[in-house]
Image 1 (tube, rainbow, N blue to C red):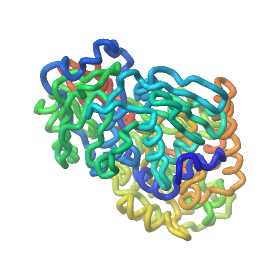
Image 2: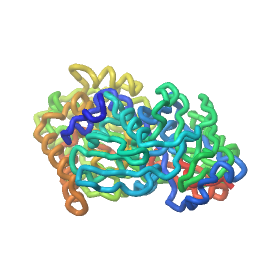
Image 3: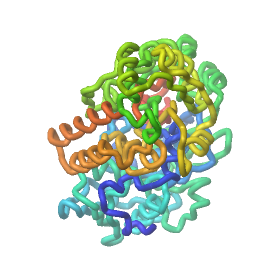
Image 4: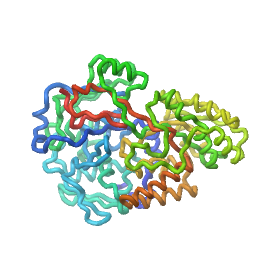
Length: 533
């Protein structure tokens, strides 16, 4: 599908289809990096980034693997985090605050009209191979990111067209007045027009402060980009990421001091790592376990039944026993730390009697269900208690069926006639951005999640939510927040898919050896603006 042919209807926001949803929704391996506060070196100093990098190496241990680094298609936690350092969008997000700032762009978009913007490229910007960046490269990168069935189509369908006005200016036409232009443009990572998909998949070239030197299954090595002239030059002569999926081995690496930073610290190893001298820091994030219902299958077509499940589950006990208190019970679709947080009009607390009452009202007397779960360790640790809590109502019996994410979605949900009951799985689309419109549309927009998984599309509540989201994204300020609040209330009442709690992300690092490093609340590591001493 050509970019300019993207459907203009606001409800097509998540029209990426099954490919996009399947590749990211499965526990969201696609979780990316973050950035430090914007205390960067000046542009004049950054032009010599490649030659003035400090001696030594910035080392880290990462917990995910991938063989796809393509900036326009990957959903991998590893690739997304690594690409933060190598490829740039016109704008990038500070992943600690989710505030956008100019990256490959020279400044803010110029608003020509309420649906037309112009963006000028950073003067003298070049790819790491020495080739000058042009507006045509931006346009071709947008077309890559919005190819039919692509992962990023859902999050970029607000763009009706993009074209090169001249060599250094891009004209962007939106499908409707859109209030989040800079935030969403960060999704389009600019790569050379003539780069092949195979080249981008294995070793992309970009304009960021670092460039890939080598990539293997065990390690990624980065070198400073000698052509980089932005605000965040590489601070060391090299950066090395050891790929260590095994939790124990990754913890050993930081305890022994062979790396300066480690992502994804297991809760039961935090004290052990801290005792060895490394700092551990928890950052509340959006990562969550959700219950998802087949809303076309009785009795889950009744919202009272769906609500009963959330009242039946002792979430505080789950957090205490399985998460070692590294999570917060959901009081809304968003975590309480989110800038747009609003406590939902319906907040689920542990109340077996309430759950039984709702089930009885809905005519449920002897419900036998299969609880499908992914095989992620932290998810499987939740399922036994959830089973016990549901059965404590006296009206439900539960069989747990655990399988790999790919199998669960392919065999149980993404079929022509899904017959599953309830799914327990993880997810975190906040790696791509943190605005409520993006987060809600990921699970509740017009895509595979609502078409096949929850099968919620077409319901009266679904239509009401789409109308509200359409209004909110075109509003600003207090008006926008008020409409989003109505969305959060509606989702909490209908719960076709809803979080049990929001997790904290724990990172370990040697604070005295990393200047400017700041952990983030999503998976991935980000060392933009960071120097190893």
